[in-house]
Image (cartoon, rainbow, N blue to C red; front, side, top):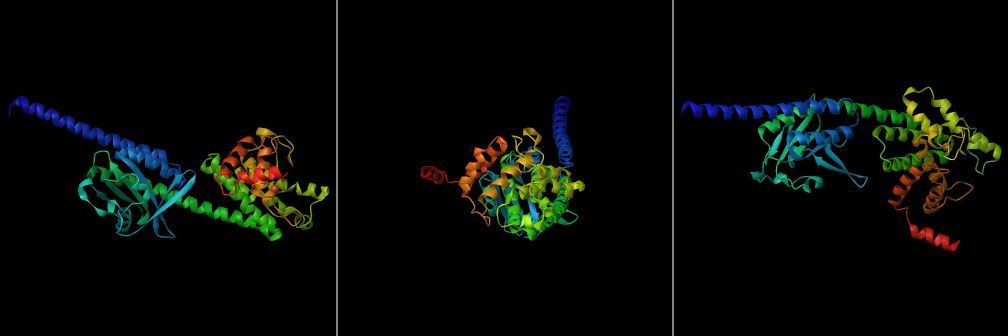
Length: 389
Ligand SMILES: [Fe+2]
């Protein structure tokens, strides 16, 4: 080989090295970016969502899924949404599936296109739809404890190579403490909600209507909140506000609260004070500061005719307006000792008829969207009712 051709060969090799170094550097930068992106995230769902799309770019593949380990069932689960409905698919931890094997052996594994590995077909339906050809799985393990599995699907370079495996393992090392943190936070938060629910249940002891009512209002409020694309924090605040919305009734005399007949004007005036009483009970609980307004203003109305403060329009927080719709809807469909509950379709129409006056327009739209997706929605029933009247 001449000096000249040796020089050219060296230059080409140097160029390839530089390219590889550049590739590694950009992956390293991507890894740092992932850390920055995740820091401070306490929602498992947010972490999974952000990590999946970021890792997909870094590992250069068609899709990335992060499975979570369920401590109670000892399985791995993957949650995805189809039209607001959460679909959860589970994978057993054993050698039968690729993801299960990775968790079982706590090892990284890969299947190449030409491997003809039977496990490429043994995937959850969500992955089946992605037509998997090459797979890479890496377990998420923190201090020997399994937290989940990362699954990369279909390398854009045909097969995953050893560098991809090393890199995915580096990603797993970055992710595990973040996921562990979020798991601990969620556990604490769950305990906190249970304490709050126990507090709200004390009203059940006084009035059985209010007790069942609280649970239903929390459910309806959640459904409306989901239609309004609230953030994870806002959904949590909404849930707690809904659970606590009638907590002030603890301060109402039993002879009014337990009265089986309709209230007199005077009794109603006392009853109307319950949002303020609730505020007095909870105002010093720091961790509930964001939650209190939803409870305190759940009987306010956009037209200013609500109680006890008579706030108007935007002065009323959205969370309080959601609880207002959920609360009124449940009150209308519930049977009380002195009157029968209304059919849900009639109650639904009442809510729509008072949009913008008693209820926030945005919240009513969200309520309408949710209601129409339920079995309670039966427009024919309303038409026949109208014809009959
Ligand atoms: Fe109330």
